[in-house]
Length: 128
Image (cartoon, rainbow, N blue to C red; front, side, top):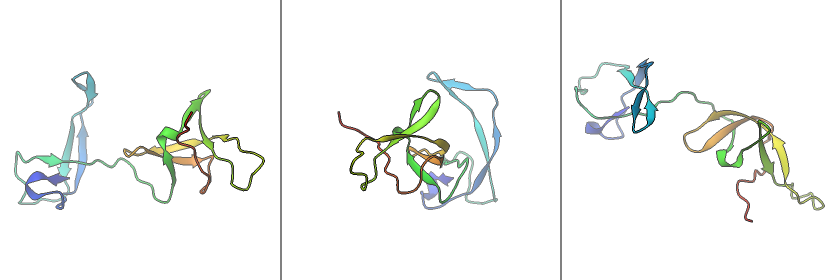
């Protein structure tokens, strides 16, 4: 969490302490009030300050990730199309591969748990 009064470079670690179980509808969108508690007391923190919050719900390192836009669903199975290897001169048709997804990022990327290996070229866009 950062506080506008101190800029984006000064972090104030905090933890989610309560998520309201009842929704609040704002402009037709369900939202849930969340209460955070600062991890440490700090005399610089004052009531009424404006906060900017990023909530990390999960994190994994050293995973294979692809753009979510490359994933399609076929008969309730997640698939991607991969380009044929450069060495396969006879086969130029993209191949559909079943995959299992993991965590989804807010940056448009998604973790691939199984079905792909590093180095395979996933098709994200085809011009028609």
